[in-house]
Length: 82
Image (cartoon, rainbow, N blue to C red):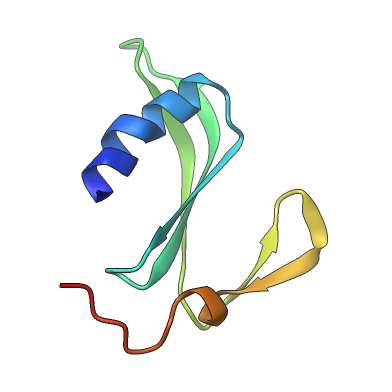
């Protein structure tokens, strides 16, 4: 699933000029945030900025600046992916 999200969907969303793209990565217990879509010199699309947020962090949502998302609510403690 991670390969599909990062290497197939991510460039498609960048090409579609989706400003913010998140992946809730349960295996690594983190939220991956991608922003600033752009076109590479090769013609492929990607995101210029990638940020990683961990479960103990609270994250401001891009379109709701007064709202903080507590990642510990989405990323359960001691969750193991097999």
